[in-house]
Image 1 (cartoon, rainbow, N blue to C red):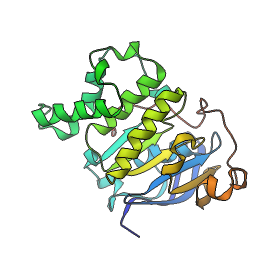
Image 2 (image 1 turned 90 degrees about the vertical axis):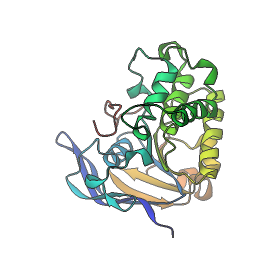
Image 3 (image 1 turned 180 degrees about the horizontal axis):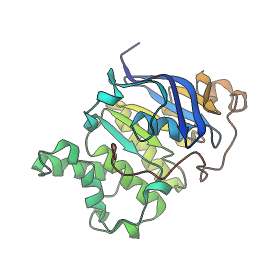
Length: 255
């Protein structure tokens, strides 16, 4: 087994006074693609938000690239794609400006060099949005907006991608573009943790499925196709637009 990129040991977390994570263990190794599955309220989004520091944990340990999260500072290695429904926000910015914001962690004092602009253009090309670079994000469809959020995460050339419901509310054409984009990142060695309600076109990429129910891990092993969708404990079919275990998400990783 290669070195862990993400490690959670005995992690507990609450939202208000409500327990959401009840002592979960999760390891994602370098180069793995892991799907985090479960019904609404199972704690999927809370789990990924605890990994990036947006939800405090009451007990347990989280490590990123072998470093305790509380001491981890190299956030350029991590690309985060929040749920589109909680990240759309009506920001008055162009597509290029939004994607460029994802590159800031790689710049020196916020000054863009030629290599930074090339990285932004490359990310836009990957998701098929280069021709919309000057458009306002408010003029985009849901699927196009999701592509922009993914391009923003890719602009920093991250080693780890964490994506919360990347296919939710996205049209089929955009789903195929996003699956192709992710396939390319995986081929280049990226490690990926995905929150999903259903695998869809991403299914061939998934190495492992982790199923949560009531904040506990019920299954950690082969994805649903290998064991039978209905054989997975606690994996209820849920409408992809629903996101009851999510809270509004701020754009900064450490905000």
